[in-house]
Length: 114
Image (cartoon, rainbow, N blue to C red):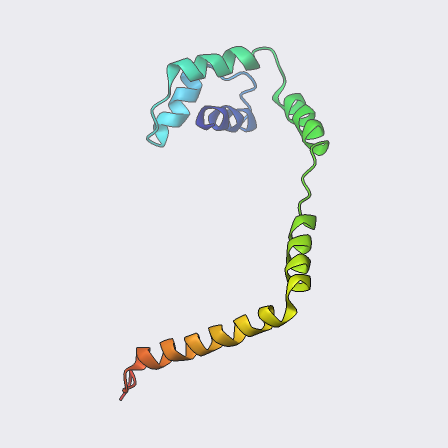
């Protein structure tokens, strides 16, 4: 990712075809050592391609990926409430009692500013 980020930064700066030396210079300026093997692979895959077109194509592919997920949680909570409403109501009361005990233990009979 760091190699690709440096490539994209150079592209934004106006260098439409950054070389390995350009990318290494950017990475070294922030104290990162470039991995020559990964850098060579990145440059070979991006050779002759327009980055803006690649980004547009990738965005179109991502648009078709389902990314919902809000429906799963509702079924679980409604199933638990239907299973035993009385038991579900007792649990919060017990938790409230435990919290009160913890609070009284914390001040130990004196306040912070006494």
